[in-house]
Image 1 (cartoon, rainbow, N blue to C red):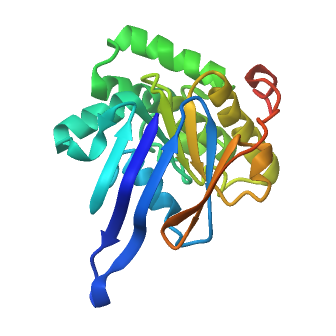
Image 2 (tube, rainbow, N blue to C red):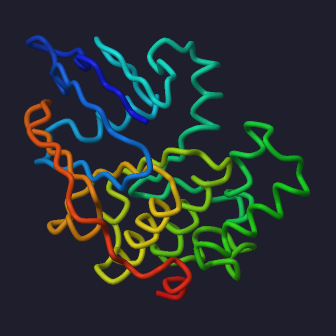
Length: 239
C-alpha cells in the first residue's frame, strides 16, 4: 500500500530551517491498523501529511497503491486524495454551518462520485455505521466531541477510500470516548481499510497491529504486534 523512499522534509526558516523528516525509507502493507508513535517534534504528523498528499516532500518518493503522490500536480493531487484517502483530524474540522449529513456528503459532491440522491443515502448509511444516524440533521455544535469525531470518520469514508489517515483522533476526547473511537478505527482495518494513525496512546499494541516509531525525523522502529481484539463495530454504536 505505502512505499516511502529516502523521504525528507525541510521546513524553511532561520538557521537552516527545521528538518522534520530525514531520509525515511519505509514499506507498509495494506489492510493494517498502523500506529505512528514518537515524542513531540519527531515528525509523526509530517509523515502522514506527506503520505496523504496534504504536504509535499523536500526530497524522496511517496507511493500509495502504486501512485507517485509527489509527482501529481495540484489539481490531480486533490482529485487523487478525494478518492483514495480519508482524513480524520484531532479537532474534527466539520464545517459549522452545514448539518452533519451535509458534512458527510461534501466529499462526494467535491469528487462527483455520487449524484445528490444516492450521496444522501450513502451519507445516512455511513452515519448509521458509526452509530450517530439520529444526529444527521443537527449542526456539529449540537454534538458531543465523540459524536463529532464519529461524524468525521463517516466523512472520511464517503468515497470509500482504501486509506484512512488519522492525526491524534482521540487527543480531544475523554478516555471512554477515545476507546470507542479507536475501536471504530480498528474495525475499519478489519474490514480491509489501511488505517494510519498518529497517537500518544500508551498501549498502542492493544489498538493496532503495527507500530512505527519515529525519533528526530527518522524511523527507529517498525514492529508487527498482535492484532487488535476490540468488539465488532455493531457492538460499539452506543459506546
